[in-house]
Image 1 (cartoon, rainbow over the protein chains, first blue to last red):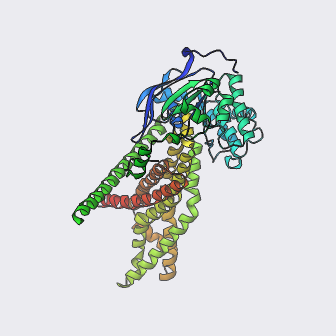
Image 2: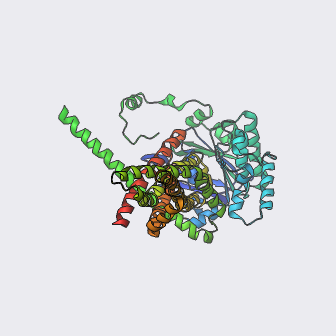
Image 3: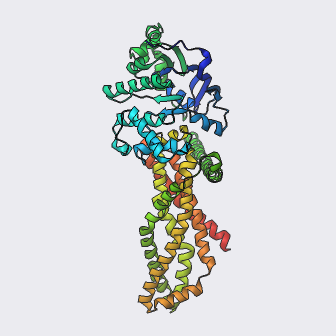
Amino acid sequence: MSSLPPPTARDAVIEVKDLVSHYGPRMILKGLDLDIHQGEIMVIMGGSGSGKSTLLRHMLALETMTSGTIRILGVDIATANPRRLAVLRKKMGVAFQGGALFSSMSVVQNIMLPLVEHTKLDPATMAIMARFKLEVVGLAGFEALMPAELSGGMIKRAAFARALVMDPKILFCDEPSAGLDPAVASAIDDLIRRLRDAMGTTIVVVTHELESAFKIADRIAVLDQGRILFVGTVDEVRKHPNERIQNLLNRRPEDDTIDPDDYLRRLTAEHGTGARA
Amino acid sequence: MASVTTPSAAVRFLERVGRGSVRGVAEIGEGAGLLVQSVYWLIMGPGQRQPVRPQAVFAQMTEIGIRAIPIVGLMAATVGIMLAIQGIYTLRVFGAESRVTIGIALSVTREFAPLITAILVAGRTGSALAARLGTMEINQEIDALRVMGINPVRFLVVPAVLGCLVMVPSLTVFSDIVGLWAAGIYVGAELGMNMAAYVDELIQVLTENDILHGIAKSAIFGVLIAVIGVINGLSVTGGAEGVGRYTTRAVVQSIAAIVVTDMVFVFVVTR
């Protein structure tokens, strides 16, 4: 399906090694390893509570890890000083799940913000660059609107435009097609593939939407209970014999395999203050 | 049975008090840290190519200061007149109504103008800051800033702190003028004293120390309002309900902090 040469370990742009992470007393990621290669679309998939959002937040250096290392473009993000991290962040674009557009700024101001903050271009040039990105995501003509005036799909596309405005080497997308109608979701999937094909951007997509994952992924990492179950191409994941992977693919709830004693114990147990939802 | 439950209730109560105290101290520490960071970004920002934008500071000043002028003016005038009424009523007991000016002059400039102004700004700006930052937090806008390499303290907090630091004392001066003027009108109507004589008396009674006393503490109030608003805004969890809860918390905490700080300030400076 993909015409890319097989990726090698040498050109890994993101290397996650033995990542352990806690949320309060709860262990979310339990020693996770993942390599993401230059120019590939890596889809990180898993059910809710699998730790995929936490993994994304760690890769964006928004959380403090308990142990392990994450290297992005060769920079160890846990030990990098703020200035180094700031330089690295200019090479990363993020399209958040809800768009995270600044509600006090118009669409074009939102998209120009990274340019305003990080470059010394003159405002006219910045506006042209912002409009160019809006063209790319199919939002030309909407630059003067405020985020509150946009539909869900438009917000996501504007968020893509903002993520792309600095021409990042790595683009992170959190649930890019969740909550959208099928036509818009499909358009966003096409956009992601086009971006990679046109600019060679490495794209990391976190999603639980199977259809979208199968459509866009070069490789899929299946996350379950804080560990990587399997990393492979779409076909490899589809044909994988592991029951939990097949449960996820066939949308079978995992609670079928519940231990009745454990279930009873959980129902009757008194929960301490440590239980945070 | 009672002997079993009583100590555990007491222990639970103690634990609650302890946890509350620890959280309170932690929050004060957070506030201090935020203030230090704000000063750091204000001074070091340009060197790190992250300068504090003057436009953002002016926008905050407009919001905090200019837009508050009507309500601050109304409250200051009301308080001035109220003080004049009470002052004349009290002094009438001794037949010393004409001495009301000194009471009005000192209480407006040293206490009422800074306090009323700060409480109004806490209600307007403290709550707005907490709600805005809280909404940004739950919409991942703060995360978005961080991943863009834009420091949220520099981008969002410093303009608010600077805005409050400048505008609360400015509004206090405005309050002083309006409060004294309104009191003067009432005194004139009640005691037949003309405005020129009233102003003359004010100038004799007031020292620059009295005015500066009010301005100095209102600067502290301003910083308190901004920092408490920001801390609460950035602590928001739990969606829209959380935003509401922390916004209320910001206002209550700012007003409490203002009144307590006022007392401490007066104690330290006046004694």
